[in-house]
Image (spheres, rainbow, N blue to C red):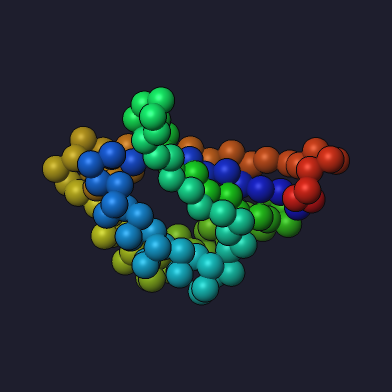
Length: 118
């Protein structure tokens, strides 16, 4: 099993709107219609040590292989449902054209033998 770690810099002033969109639109489509095995979805919060870091949203998806990840993402991204959901995140007045996402990162991780997630 491999794990895709997706990390986003979301505009802190728009984090509530993003989380609502993720909960009500993105996750139901990806997990329901396309069977993504989301292991967790988190957002960094302000603590007594300071504000949330710029990379403030993280989620992990389990995949059997890199090939499965690429295939499932390609199918999802080509679907009308995902295109419509993503259209809701567009804002032509923002420098990168996105309402929420400033930076998107994706890394594929392999567990070490002692990891509980194999």
